[in-house]
Amino acid sequence: MKIVVTGGKGLLGTELVRRLEGLGVTVSSASRRTGVDLATGKGLEAALHGAECVVHAATHRLRYRRVDLDGTRRMIKILANRPTPPHVVYISIVGCDRIPQRYYGVKYACELVLGRSRLPVTVVRATQFHTLVASIARTVTPGALAFVPSGMSFQSCDHRWVATELADIALGPVPSGYHRAADRAGPERVSLADAVALMRAQEGKSAPRLITIPAKGGTLRAFDAGANLPDAQAKIGGSSFREFLKP
Ligand SMILES: NC(=O)c1ccc[n+]([C@@H]2O[C@H](COP(=O)([O-])OP(=O)(O)OC[C@H]3O[C@@H](n4cnc5c(N)ncnc54)[C@H](OP(=O)(O)O)[C@@H]3O)[C@@H](O)[C@H]2O)c1
Image (cartoon, rainbow, N blue to C red; front, side, top):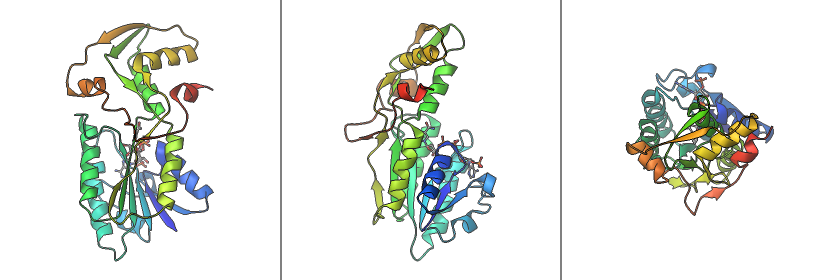
């Protein structure tokens, strides 16, 4: 079986490729580093040739309209011409349909175009990865003060666990059409204030003085309302943020 991983050189993609290779699967990574550009289509058709499954994990935090959305459309166009199209597994984000931030909006738009594609598609939404929460915690704590938006909390997950979940889905049964899998989330909910304190403790520093910022604007209000948190049907697994931070 040949599986193509778009974004196979990224944080999640690297783990997924490693996992699949460890299981003896033929895996090919598609990203600019392997000569494939989703924004222009360069190398894409050849990269997708012979794929029985495509795990679509490529993304660009700034050029997401061209890379994520146009790239997804471009990929669908190529795959839809196949007599037996491959299973497309798309990694999305919990709350992308509720958080009015452009990147999240594009993730949701990708889900919608895949839903209309008539390809066999599995969409898996995951919560923020621990690495992202750690990076947010660092950003809001420039020194002894932490500027924390009101009500912001995460139930982040370990990207290595998400990679194992995606591998299982890629190797599992192919749906007959569009399928939305259970959301994936880590085992513990942590406020951003706690995440900041945990990280500071890890670095041997005292907890910073918290300055709470009111949840103004659509995105902060959505986080305040918990739009990024998993629902009761979500599949929970992997390490907690606290465990992830341990050396
Ligand atoms: N990070 C999170 O907290 C989180 C949470 C839930 C879901 N997700 C989703 O998980 C997926 C992977 O996220 P990640 O954090 O692992 O991303 P990442 O580390 O930024 O990796 C992005 C990948 O996309 C590739 N890429 C960028 N521009 C490209 C282009 N023009 N054409 C082809 N490939 C391109 C990059 O490789 P090159 O540089 O070689 O092109 C890289 O392999 C994304 O869809 C993201 O939305 C992330």
